[in-house]
Image (cartoon, rainbow over all chains, first blue to last red; front, top):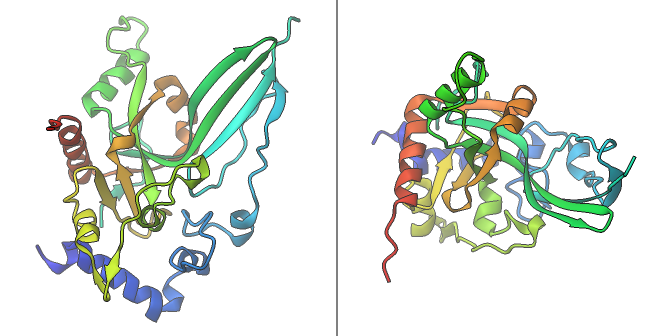
Length: 90
Length: 187
């Protein structure tokens, strides 16, 4: 196995870069490797801090099936959303 | 590092990665209310055999043919942020505490971490993407595969497609997934 294809070598190189070359990585990406940081929202290297820090607005909601619509999700971990919809006889 | 194709292609393919995928977890009818819960997975990879997906696409788009080769659902597995994974926190939003894997000891990778990075642990597949893909190093957990409705995937395909893992690497994933599923549980 050559060094380029050795995952451990590649990963170590990647960790080295994180500490030695700040300009190579976005601050958001670095946050993913800072254990003191709440790592919510770090899945995307280019995600903006504002979208990372804003909680998803998905409380239990009451919608009719017609009103239900998809939102844009920007999350790093799987999340559960519960929806209650009224059945209309109309 | 794996190679990927950023071209969306004409159909769902094995090795496609999709983002923000909804999985219907539970559905209940109570009186005049319907309650359902769904899980939003940040990233999933398609595991269904590519020949099945190709046939499905042909039969789906040709009214003169029967629906014999249509597939109702597509097998996928979730991708988790490798740091969340090592902390055992990748399913924390679902109230699940997963096993923590110690990554380093005295500055060196532990055996468990090495096995995961070298894809020697049958349950997991480590992926590292090039700079064209906005996904941090990730782990596929073969134990947590699930199915998605094929029509739903076609609906979200253009908006949620991220990339397609190129053939050699996707064959590796497919082969390792098949081996994991076919393992024999010994007492």
